[in-house]
Structures are given as structure tokens and as C-alpha cells.
Amino acid sequence: MNDLTADLLARLQNGIQRKRELVLVPKTKMNIEILKVLKSEEMIHGFEEVEGGVNVEIMYDDGEPVIAHLNRVSKPGQRIYVTSKNIIPIMNGRGISIISTSHGLMSGAVAKSKKLGGELICKVW
Image (cartoon, rainbow, N blue to C red; front, side, top):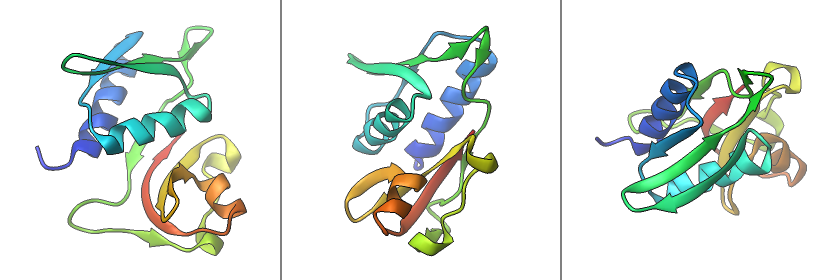
């Protein structure tokens, strides 16, 4: 497996479709940072590092998952970069984009407010 970020998103998507409360994902620095952004944006309850990976606690609202779609944008074969002016709201503000900037990973709204651009990792809504 070369693209561990895509693996993270696929595992979360599969866990959400199966209505799981906990999903085990691989432990990498990038995955931990993505999960920190998702937690700060209140899209997951939290995560805990365990032996063999990271347990992610999925957030549900009245039986419906808060996250419906996870879409990988920048891939190892084709990197997608955006400037702060080109960061657009996802689903009219109901979703977030995760951007890798020179100051670390952050949501698109935070990057735009700090006037930072970077690699567009994924979109979550």
C-alpha cells in the first residue's frame, strides 16, 4: 500500500457505511494529523492510539453519520495545490477541505483566514 491517506479515507468510509462506532486505521503521522483536523471540526468524537493502529470513534447524529463522503483530491501521481484565494467552501460550508500548509495540516477555512495555500489533501462532507 503506497497511499496510506487514501487507505485511511476508505476505511473510515467503509466503517461509516457499516454503522461502526470504532474503526481501526493505520498509524502514520499524516493520518494522526488528518484525524486531529477532523476532531477539531467536530466530525469525529475522537481517536486513540492502540497497538496495531489508531481507533477512530465515529460521530453519529440521531443515527445518521456526521460524515457522509470522504474524497481524496491530491494523489501521489498528481498533486493538487491551491492558493488561499482558490480555497472554496465545500457543500456551501457544510463540509471541509483539509490542506497541508507550511504550518501543518488544517481545514480550508483556517488556511484561508491565515492566508495560507498548500496541497489539497481531501474533501470531507
